Image (cartoon, rainbow, N blue to C red; front, side, top):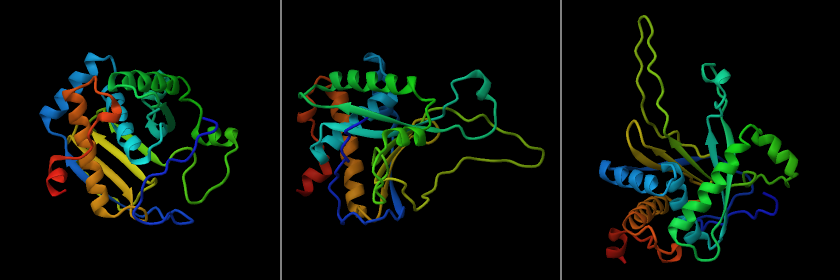
Length: 245
């Protein structure tokens, strides 16, 4: 991870000297047929659904930054030992997935690269993120998060139902009006399938976030239709946006 340059997204407003963590979110439902085709494509190429979605997200970041060296943060449950599976508490750790998109690869080759990077990162998931940052001796920058500015999070593990004598509980979604990073993609593939873009309101206007999430869906549709397409040729403009243009 040494020598990793910050990801320079095109923002609507100048980056403040210090993060405010104020945010908002835009949401798009993940239609059952779209989800099924994505799962099928992932299975055909020996990757998980999250790896496929991360690869498509990196295509979007490539188009908006021009950078072929892209790192994102990915939270993991960090409960891969039997001794921790039943313990109460949070063991979540953050991994950094740094992928080389240079050389004009097609999407299938990008999937291979993302898979390789993901497996390497999972091998070292026991190292706490704060230890990693300290070992790399990164310069302190209050305007950014260390190592990455965008995060990808996927809900793909069911939470066991809990029962209490006189209580019932249910899951619900809400906009917390906060953003830990410039941009966070949250994908729910289980409970209420949807894609949510959480964004820093100090950097992006609402219409920009709306456009980004629609472009992400366009990338997903493009790679499902033509997995062998060169990533530089993947169209990011949705049909609605094309009509407006």
